Length: 203
Ligand SMILES: C[S@@+](CC[C@H](N)C(=O)[O-])C[C@H]1O[C@@H](n2cnc3c(N)ncnc32)[C@H](O)[C@@H]1O
Image (cartoon, rainbow, N blue to C red; front, side):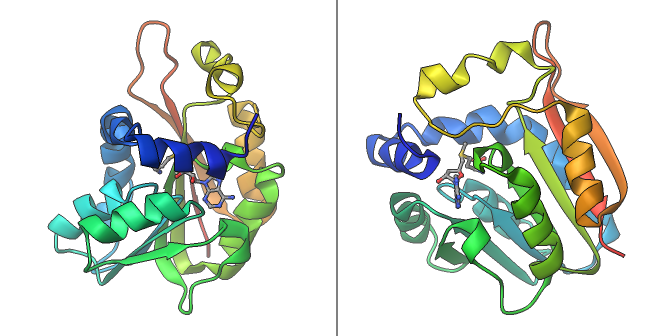
């Protein structure tokens, strides 16, 4: 078993990271719809940006004042910077980093369950990353109701993957201070419960 950052660094080196854009694209587009019309020229952070595909996708829209991708894997960030010299990519563990200026939107796809205590990283994002009236939108495929994912820990060899119900994820958001917390299930399939998306505002 390896840490999440070690496993994803291996993926960046072997090229396996390329599949993440394909697998995550559809639900992430729906996640963008949840905030896009609400903010004019927002600043946005992609928490656990991997190779930066979402940062580059958002950049093409020319709607954002500043787009920052943060990831703990050196090889993911090296790849992102190589593909995109324009935007901001930072290599750091999310719980050890704070932006200089808080942002309107934090988006994160398939990252939050790689923390031993996800409630602490959610609280850290609430306290240190998001402006008043800002929003956090989190997407995850690995959660209790989505039985298809239950063998992923064994399959990927990642040592830390926390399996919680959607209600517990909602509770983490509410306990951190987020208001108007809602959940969505995007891209539902026959045996696939869909990507669990949790959205919460900081007022
Ligand atoms: C499944 S990938 C998702 C990447 C990207 N969000 C996407 O949709 O393609 C998870 C990412 O989270 C990063 N990660 C995991 N734990 C982390 C931590 N503690 N701090 C920073 N990044 C972390 C990994 O390096 C990896 O790039």
